[in-house]
Length: 203
Image (cartoon, rainbow, N blue to C red; front, side, top):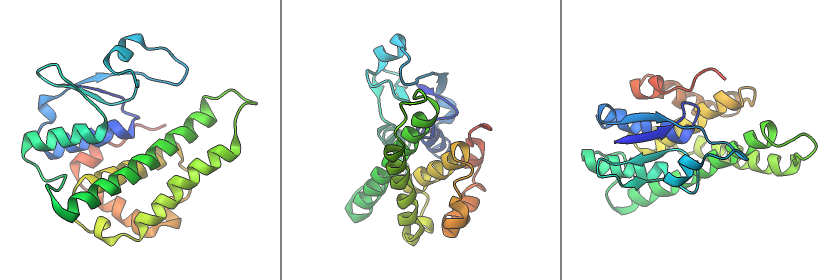
C-alpha cells in the first residue's frame, strides 16, 4: 500500500498512529506529497481532485480517502478495535471524530489565513471564528472523561492530533493552561510509541 503524506499533516499523522497500533506500518510505503492553497499539483490532483492529504492507494490500486475512511479500512484489514463495530459506542466515536476533524479543518484554515493569504486581504473576524471553533471544541473534550479515560480508539487518536497540531502551529495559544485535563491526557498519550514517533517536526 502507498500513503501520500506530510509529516506536518495532522490528518496523515492520524493514519500513521493507527497503522502502527494495528501492526500494519511495515506494509505501507510513505510517499511525501506537497499541497498548498493556490499552488498547482496536477499529478496529485489526478489521484484526488480534492488535493487533500492523506490518500491511501491499496495493493489493488484503489484510492481511499479521507483519513477516517483510511483508518476504518486499516482497522478492518487488521481486525482491530480502533472503531467500535456497532451500537451507541460506534455512533459516539464517529460523532467525536466528526468534531475533531472539523476542529482540525478550522485550525488549518487559520494557519492558511495567517501564513498564506496576502497581506491586506486577511480577514481577522473569519480567522477568529474558526479558531473559536477549535478552542471551544477543546473545551468540549476537556469535559468528556469517557474519551480522555476510555479505551484507545479513533477519538483518542484524533484528539492527540488536534493537540499536537496546536503545539506545532499555535505554540503560544495556551491550551495546556486552559485545559489541564487535556494536558494530562496528552502527556499520557505521549507514552505510546505510535504517538511519540509521529510527533511533527519542529515548526
